[in-house]
Length: 439
Ligand SMILES: [Zn+2]
Image (cartoon, rainbow, N blue to C red):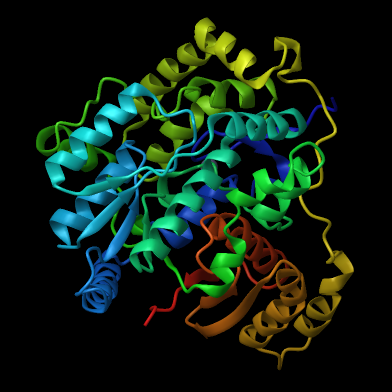
């Protein structure tokens, strides 16, 4: 494997390929954090959130539920469920994607929380053998497996939304303190990529039951990441979970203890020489956001490194058996499949490079050009993108078609747009994915 040149970020200490470090020595994540989150006006955001909730309370006043919360039993989704119910007075249905890998700890925690909050909890079942065949097929080509879990969540949310006529879907994704979302230099449709990867080995009737793209293209869902509106402060979250909800925090340092193979997620990135050092990511996110001191950071880091060095053998063996691979397969340098064939190349953006030389062309016009250039690529995948407004360096866009209501759109679409805007137009434009209220 060709060795990548890496440099540590001056701010959060994560190592990156050179191209992800800017002139001041900061990484793209710190850079984006400073622009988007550090000065975020949460008072305004909360007002907006209250308006959104008010709309759906009214819309669904004669129905049993007015929102659906994606619920894994982990700390973020538990806190999101608590906020929706207790703080904003919503009538949520908690929905869990049955990914086949839920731990007894997570199931117990979910039951405790749902009972305590008096919230109905729905886990639509999936066929265990079919799921395992999907995990195996996907993993053998990519050495990743979390995507299958995302599909089960998406499927469960879509099913619940249709059944109960609830368009508002809430997640506990916390982009501010999640370091795993990099600026992407290509885009792909998550479900198309999945199909490309499994279609040779899995019958269509099996994999197609995990797709929600067609439903999303027709049904208007409003997917809302709650922590885009409410500040995500880890200390406050644990306080509520432990003091008010009897949440079992025994495994609170294990970020994915809701999954049987949570240690493997980190381990696989580790052995794959992924371009960040994973042990740093959780602590780095908190350090970047000013939630912990440098001393606490160093201490957390030492713990994390020790944890990675001691991957649980039993879990590793169960993993190898479940996925039907030998240990030597992990970290094997393989030709990973192309997630989507891009139709845009560097020269597609030449018109912008040219137009930028003309001082009479405004940034707003450049952004409009850029969005029109990428539009066909998004439309090819059944989605669409449009510019809503551009004011005070703040670009608002709207995704529609199959991109609307997609759980991964903020990660694969917005990050891609961010990459293009930084590269071709300006370094200080903030991008927001606005979502229409469903009537
Ligand atoms: Zn950084």
